[in-house]
Amino acid sequence: MEKNIMDVSLLADYAGLSRWKVKKHLKPGRFARLKEDILQRYADIFEISLSELKNFEETLKNK
Image (cartoon, rainbow, N blue to C red; front, side, top):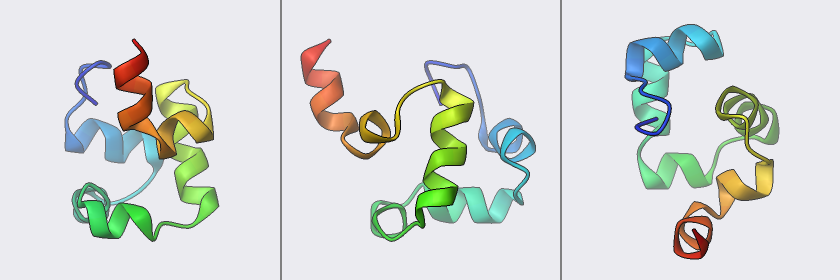
């Protein structure tokens, strides 16, 4: 979100979700349990692959 200069409201608008759902998704425990279609929606918004989204810590180390 920071890289794309987004806040929760803007991400919620792009994803077509409510702000409170996006806030819940930002918590690590909730994020780990998200369905593939929601994760793909976020990956498309950020223009990254699904594997990059799931393994963002490794992606950060490699850059």
